[in-house]
Image (cartoon, rainbow, N blue to C red; front, side):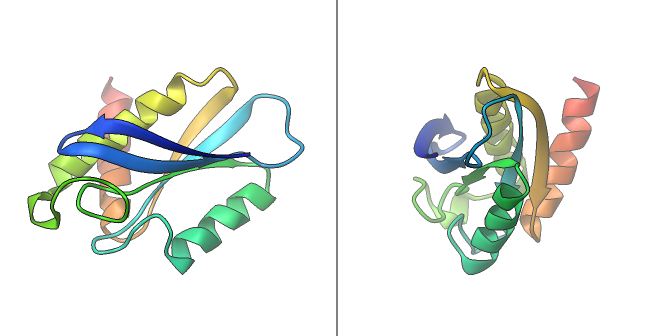
Length: 125
């Protein structure tokens, strides 16, 4: 299953792509995949990470940070604190899905910084 999603982030509409592995009908782990600066959710690298996770029974949510890909906003307004808030909204969205058992954060380059910082914040919450 593939579903295009949107939600309101720190600088407007954030676009995402939720994908679930075929044949899984029970509770799932969902990996939120966060791209690096200047990239977007549909680059070959992000697709490769996504496809490997799906092949191993893990669902994914790839988002475009503001000013990237299909999301609103300007690239010049992008900051790490704003990306952390946009990623936190992705966690909130995935947390609301009834079939989700566990959420993991995966990031590449600046997305890795965002994933690590958000994980630290969520651990305190």
